Length: 556
Image 1 (spheres, rainbow, N blue to C red):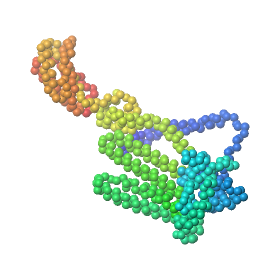
Image 2: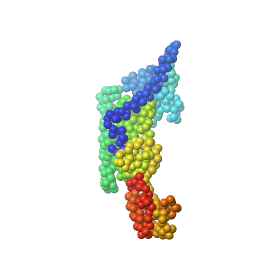
Image 3: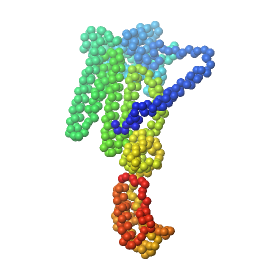
Image 4: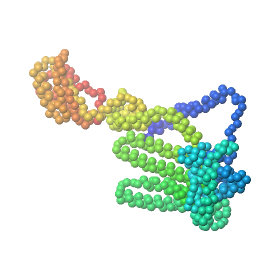
């Protein structure tokens, strides 16, 4: 796989040797928060008197979510006396509260059955303070809606004081609207839809607090919703296939990849939208709704996974076609990282939907992530360095360069390291953090090559011969189009045993091999000219003409 980390290419034993120090460091970090508590427990004096624990509401009314869950559980068990404790009955005389509370609980259940609904549990506050940013009174939260005919009003809960401290109960404002809404809905066909369709035995027999007919209707609605979504997606696939055959004969649509999770998600949304409008029992909808919400989250995570997979695949293929394999490696790594985040978010959302408090889990995940980041500090440093190298692009795959004291051809730019093939054909692996910090000399990006030979004439050469040679050299080199500018040919002075003549110019050729060919050709022309004029070079002959052999012959 492109961009696979070098770590995963190691043998199993080597992997464990690499992982064990990080695991030990992680265990050390996890023990750090516990150590102060242990130390304090050992050194602190025993308290003179234990403090009494804060009173807890026995009905779980400490949060809006707890109040909703308790009320639904009470009406599911047809315990309307317990259901009444979740209502704010302070405005009702104490002598009438018992009977009036149970009646209001039954009426509220009827309104909820006839199209009312609670908000998804994940959106209802599970904190003692409720939602403080919902533009309502700080002690009031909306947890759903109730309907009477065509009119609907918000289902509110409010915070009141009790013997056990502040608790949340269904607001008196909502309870005041219940009788009027119930009267408006008496003649509504939508409210009695199932009663008109289902036989009486299916309405009289209860299972899990709801009529068995309502459960059958929910399962039937789910099946029909999935079949409808399957048909809708099938039509979409046919249109999609026709479009791509007509417009893009060689292109492949990603719609077919997204079809399975999209079917599931559309079906879950359809059930959530249609169920309240059929007059289904609120108990059945709440219990079954948990399952539907979990399915919706799974479908959404599955859909997001496939979208990222499809888009990432297209990007990676295009990068590979352009020859930017190192950027494709980074793109593949980012795609895997995003998919991992999708999985984590999906798991957290599912557990939150099921009613688990994920605050502690998220906090532990943050601490674990910090510890993991500290343990993998070098890996992250190399990853950041690889991004810097790709952004700056001092070298590319196939280029000849010198990195620090290492000289060779760049063979691979990976996520963790860079591989260089030296002139001795050995493979040098340099971590990207070290690579980015070193001095880099790139020979492959020379636009032109330095031509700088020295001609050392014998000391007995006469001035007239030197002048003639300089003139002939300038004429010879000026005619060569491979020199972008006329080369500089000068006598540098008089040496102890030679007369040095310098040629300074640049050769415009595509690569180093072409430069060597030009250098060889021009050097032979200079030797021919020296021989034609009857001149002698200062000994040693071959070291007197041309630069010293290069110790770094970079390939083109």
